[in-house]
Length: 219
Length: 219
DNA sequence: CTCTGTGAATATATTCACAGCA
DNA sequence: TGCTGTGAATATATTCACAGAG
Image (cartoon, rainbow over all chains, first blue to last red; front, side):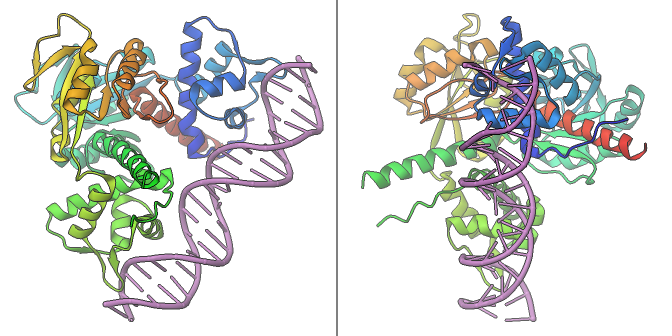
């Protein structure tokens, strides 16, 4: 019998990986037990928030004691899906794409970049980290053959929609979009959009507001 | 007399740059007028959401007509603070750092990367995009001399906290952290954390849940 | 008539506060 | 006793629905 699939809120889904990251750091430092108070402090959330988030996935703690770091880490890894094998294709072998392909952190988490695509003939056939850069016309074949489930788009903005289209046609169900334009995909395809300019703009917006408030207070 | 500083919610602050991005794209395509319905569609929010968000900043539309794209774009740019000059320092001249320094999109928005720092003697003195890589011991001097307001950290995880400390000591009030570890800074310093592994994990988590639901429905 | 701007209603998310287990 | 897990209370955010401007 399968466990009831409780509906997790997006807010909770976004925080679980943060808990996991903190637990991994603690585990590497050979800590064993941590309370919701201390872990919440580390991540920057309220203890009740942390306990409630975890409670949606199960009961992992011991009352009066706290959480076994290694156990909770393994449980969360498993629930997130990190204990399965995931294969990734990168579309766009520019500077950002190359930086991601060589990003050591992905390897730690068994996130395997299996193929790299571009549409620039001068790049095709060259190697990055033992992987050949392939023409985007091969996306469908390679994704199917290699069982790739996730696509990362690091093309220029004007090619982003084409890249997304090719990935969706190849059967990809999750896309990480690093371009400064949003892409349209069918509802069933998960997209996360990381827009570096937007991140900076949000920072600047907050900075501005701080300054405005200061000016206001000071007359 | 200064306008009342209404408290904007974080959710609203995070969306305004998305509206701005869409408006810029429309403007480049020589569109003039757009309704809240169409703009909301483009950004992927509800029309009422968009109208309410904008209403916190002022009244920009014309009833029965819609929004003047160019005017709204200018208004939002101004409110976010993009019409001021912002200078940026990048700490960490690795692959990701170099990709950001060369990122064309920042230039479009007048976001000016003015200095690059590293602690690797073999990198110091070399040039990236006409900027010399300087030793991190110079952060304070350069930040003060050049009037830099924003720091981007692209060091390895283990150096992130040191980089943050040096930036804060130099008077920086806003930090964009691209490392896979969180940094501690005083409350008044704004931090945004972009963790590429976390982004992928969130995607995987959502993908997993889709699959679970499917398995559940199919028995 | 059309589409904005916005109070009121609803829905979500967070926090409180404490029962219950180790 | 100390800390988790969780309903109930509170706070935040979103959506509805419509008055009012052009």
